[in-house]
Image (cartoon, rainbow, N blue to C red):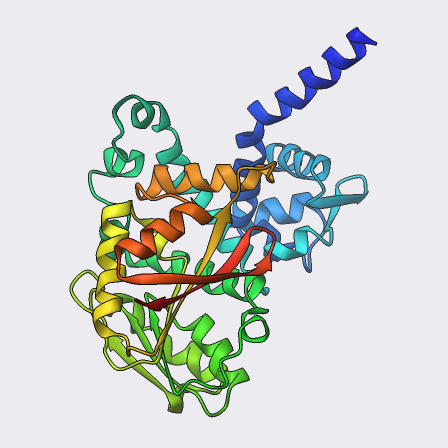
Length: 337
């Protein structure tokens, strides 16, 4: 029995250590266009010819992806996408193809510098690229497009329940602070026809918002405003929304953003943070690894209920409640104090 337990844990640990092998294989298949081609082409030799790859090496990569359930070898040398693999096709809801590209390139390189971060406290991404993550996106439009596609896709995948979880019907003007290309405010405005909105983000981000808001049919009810939330945010909203913004920053920077929201919000208004909320109990491993990912990329962090309560209090807000959306993802509601 003891030997069996040791072996089981050894193989479990081996899989953890070897995890980058899997993510890099997925990245290569997405980057080369193999995943999209597999919707019509099955022969590995034809695939290799179309993407200018070495046929035998590509065959071995495809067999590796078979082992993790991304593709299936229907007969010798012919492959099709599995149901899981279909989630990587370009343009699919969730756009996990974009996330695979980010993980395979910038994220992968930054995580390689985790040791220095642990030793010094410096943000790994900054050390690798000699600039911070968001400045990097401003200077790399093609990476910014991939990042925005990822955020739009993850919103569709993770947050479709937001309009039904929280009652927006009594509000008049929603300000989405750091709302990216408008995927979440688009969902909310579509579900609340009498609500008007303001999408607020950096100029290089909101320039891509028209098509997203048009797709939701809400462009005529959503004002698009460019700016920096460290300086100020649009005033006059009776409800303010920040989705996956606070986790990008350390406590001092997060307080700075929230204080600007406090200055702008109506006295009877409400603040909503859509964020992962950590617990001190047993959690899915993705939760604490996501916290580390924020450390590596931006110097930010995921937070517990107690940490959100303290952060809001320091910013002029009183916590009202936590509303669960998905596992560990909540709407954190607060009001001005």
